[in-house]
Image (cartoon, rainbow, N blue to C red):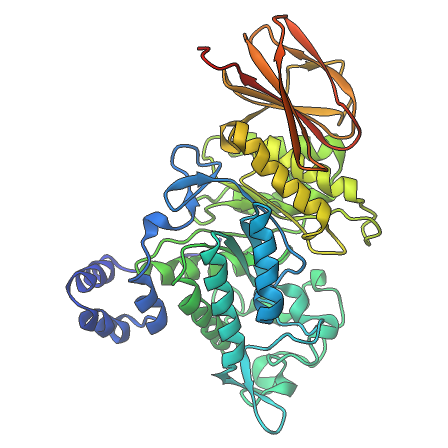
Length: 492
C-alpha cells in the first residue's frame, strides 16, 4: 500500500483562519500552499454538511443535504458530461422524473459517438499541447455538474478508464507521444500502440505514480489533469470519486491517486469520499480486499462486478460483503448493473432487473442500470424499476430495511428474498412469480399487505392480514413483484 502524505496541521489551520477573515487572505493561500485556485475558491462556497457523505446513523447508506438517501439511477451512457446540452438535459430530466438520483461519469474521452472532446487544446498542425486546455471539454464538465446538482443527482466519477488508453482508442489520444508536442516516445516511455486488452496491464500509463515507476514526464500531465478536474468538482457537493473502471492493475496506482485526491480536497477545506472498482467477478477475492480492508483510504466500496453473477450466488456474495464490512460499515455502491437482452455477456433484461432488486433489498447504498447494450440504461423497463423503488419508499425507506437469510419456507433458490424493518415493515421480493410462506411468529401483527408490480410501477392494496403464525404469499403474476407488509395504523 502506498504511503500517503496529507496536508500538515499548520496548513489546515492557516487555511481555515484565512477563510474566516477575507477572500483576499484566502487567495493569498493559493500560492503559499500550492493549491488549485479554482478549487480553493469553490470550496469556500460549499457547505460540507450538505454534501454527499455516509449517513452517521447507518454508515451502510448515504446522506445528502443532511438527510439519508438511497441512490438509484440508469443512464444511456457512462460519460454524460460529454453529451451536448440538447442531449444531456432531457436525459437528466427523464431520470429525475422517474425518481432517479444517481449517475456514473467516467472522465472518458474516447471518440465512439462522434461528439466527444479531448481535454487538451489541438494546434493548427493537428497535434495536441498538453499544457493548454480545450475549454469546451471543461465547460461541458462544469455544465454537467451544475445540472445534476440542480436536480439532486449524485455523480460517481471514475477518474481513469483503462479502455481509453489501449486498443483502438490509444492511437488518436493526446497522451500518445506521436500526437502531442510535449514529449517523445523515448522521453515518456509510451509506445504508439497498445493493441492488447487493457486487462493485460501492458500500458505504462498506469505505472507512472511515484510509488511505482515515478515517470515524471507523463505523471506531471496526469496530475495536472486531476487538479483541473478537482478545480471543477470540488465546487459541487454531489460528487463521489472512484479511481478506475474495473481495474486489475497494481493497487499502488489507485491508492496513490486516492490519497492525492483526498489530500488536495483537504487542502481546499473539503472532505471527499473515494473508492476503487476491481475487475474480479468474485467478491471474495484478494483483489476486492484491497478496498474492503482499507477503510482509512477507501470510504466506500463499489462491487459492480458482482453483477456478472446470477441468481442466488449474486445475493449470497453480496451478503458476504455486508458481513465482512460489518465491523466498519461503509456504503456499498453498484454503479454498473449488467443485464439486457442480446448483450455480449449473454445476460437478459430479467437478469438486470433481478440484480437491481436483489441489491436494493440486500443492503446496497446505490444501484444503477448500466448503459445499453450491456444494461437497461434509462429504458422503459429501467424507468419502471426506478419509479417502483420510490413507491416502495412511500411505505418503508430502503435504509430501514435489513436483509434476512431466514424467515421464508417452501422457497426455491432465487425464488424470493426477504428484508424487514423490525416491527414496522416486511418486504418479500419475488423474482419471477412463485409462492412461499412467511414466518410471522416473531413478527406479531396486525399487518396490511400491499403488492408492488415493478414492471408497471403500480402499488395495490392494502388488504388486512389475518392473525396467523405464518402467511402464504403467492405472487399475483410473473415478473418482479414485491409483497410489502406494513404495521396496521394505531398499533404499537
